[in-house]
Image (tube, rainbow, N blue to C red; front, side):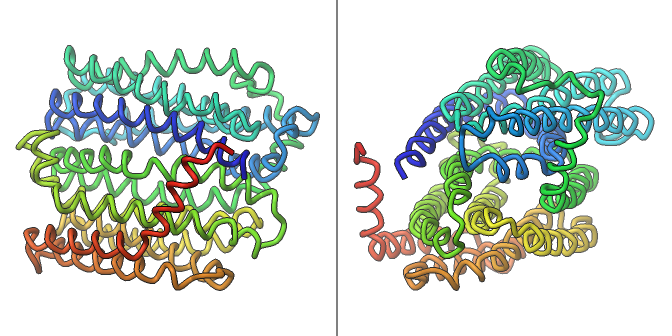
Length: 478
């Protein structure tokens, strides 16, 4: 438990500082680019984030499953082989994705809207490929640091490189718009690669693509492909849906979406830092019931904190949006609420699935994720042309809620005190219904603040013991 707390502290402190500085840089980007150019920049960064997920090919889960229980495993012959094989896997898939995207943009006229001039399209494409190459190859290095339990260095990803990347991007945007922002991003990404190589040495070999490390690759793919298939399907669905949104509703709508994503990153920093450490801790336990026992209290406290933040935001979001982003972004009010609600359920889903992944139940994971993705794809393609951004956000919300219900059922059966989550579930369900009604124009936004304040006071009163427990844990020195 002490080791888990220490690992979480490293990641949380890095992520906390990083997200604060990244948030400030994103504010500058938003004000200097405006809704339309911010939407274009969002298309680029979403492409990079999608590639960052796809290049891992499920090897991140496999590496953590095979070596995550003991930090010394990475230094064994078997561990070193898997680490180098994972580096090779990410490098090869990064190269293939870069080639595919280059052909798609240059010859297929994809990604960027038709309004982008050919000369600007060429420069943006070259910068995008550099971003993809650096970020894709670096993906394996961060996972190797996690497996080695070097959370103090892993924290630099969120605490230094992410905010520095956004800071230089915002400075570049001031001088040359979207192209300048991408140049700033590339500079930091290149520096990041050199730093990672100096830290990891022979355990990270991003330039090695031949000969293939057959034994290590087979091990990684055998364990990680079911996990990867779900991420691949989700990316192949939501990335095209975002492009469809830009084409049908305009880049400004994608810019409003970006505002919600900026706030979403701050909102989700607590579970994002806790999940990797939690998985390593659960992986050390062989009994599923014991894994759920370790999860139960952190799950309830994180759910409580995220729900309270969401309710406070819904009460104050008009003031927040105008103060931070300006009056031109007031149309982002409902999108930000929906994105934060989606982030709440996504965070809970990431938590409840950890015992299943630690037990190696990737087929169950794949069933629920893939089923939700297919249903979301069908609804998205049918609905987005008519409803635009609201349809995209509701489809995204549906994609998160379905797996949460599926993953939560086996975990709920093993909980010792499931009734303690009842009030949180009821309030979360009420917020969900209210925001869906607002998205469908059945009720007005003005109804939300009063409801949000009353709901906040209710759960704060009912869960005062959890607040006390959290305060006691944070203040403990052991």
